[in-house]
Length: 235
Image (cartoon, rainbow, N blue to C red):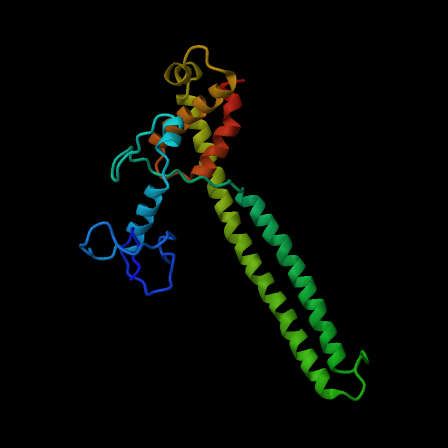
């Protein structure tokens, strides 16, 4: 019976290649002890070792040491998101609400006129008229409902915008009293640092200082504020 020299699986007569390892079968294993068959992972690793060329590995340069599981710096992922002004979002919702209201009301009015045969679109096909007017009427009612939802969302965003404006005013006042450009440069910059790197070093240091003072700040709002306030410190 043919055997696979890698995974040691036994095959019936007529089979020439191992289905798992893709190597040619042999009539007899090198040793007479038939060890238990290796799993697919072990078989693939053994097949890889058979075709591994030590000379090519030597030419590829020194191996990089990879940290074992559980080792390495414990760095928490930093999540960033683009800041969107709540006042702008509130205005967008208001415009969307007005558009939905106008389309919904005009469309529903048109469906009523068609249904009452004031606008003679259908001729002697009452079943089709009821079906189409019902579907289109429900669609335009949904437009009106979405308009109401958008108006409510706009009001909520306006309240949120007022809160954000108050927070930005408080941040501005605190930064004017406590942030010093020279101190930030001493704590964050190095000698002969390129100008483009100074911006990132300075803004990161400003972010650390403000986060230590104001807890649980929205990081998108903070980054937007720092970008705007940066010119006040480093004109």
